[in-house]
Image 1 (cartoon, rainbow, N blue to C red):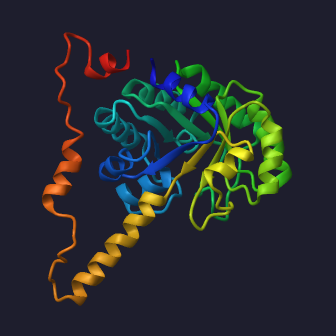
Image 2: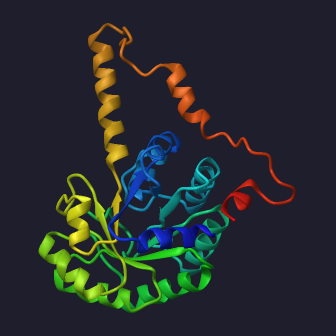
Image 3: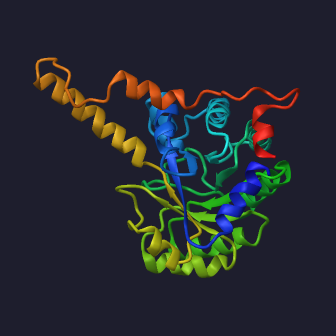
Length: 288
């Protein structure tokens, strides 16, 4: 079974599928112990790889390289990848989709923002004319073989959110994401607009959208819940707390810290241990 088909089947099951944002291999190693689906977050990648805000600095080869490492370590997990606006150009977007499918991505999220882009939960977003975005989306859909494609709008006006959600649902996209939905009432209107197309909801601490449980999201008609930032924000807090404590204790390491053995055991699980069967890759063998 292909990675795209595997993800589609998960989304089709009753309830809301949680997808956890990761920003490096260590965060992914921890998240993979708890959840079956991982999300390559643009915000997380910008912060961890570049030390910059999520305003369009990410280079697509870095994303492809990261996904390749993820797939090698986690052959059975779903990998949904944020590709921003497809890195501006339509031909680049097509190329990136093909590259990501080749290295084992399960799906991508393509947004309709204009440059300079912004995180979906901050002020200052501008969106492409709908016809321009639909042309880019059609090119991406044509380029993929079996990759799940999530069409995303960053419209901020609620009426435009609903209008664009309906237009995206009318395409061959596998799911629709309206980022920054401000209320449960707006979420219900968007869900009605997309009809039977799976709806994706992005949850970010401190973001524009209400914090909702998986049960609440299922009742509202959401098929996939992306948790973009719990790992990133937890790491931010934990590192700051640990170094504050180290300074306060005159450089003495805490006795209750994770030790080297536990840390190495976590990442040792990512080693490829099975022999490669003939000319076929271990990944191909594992997925068929």
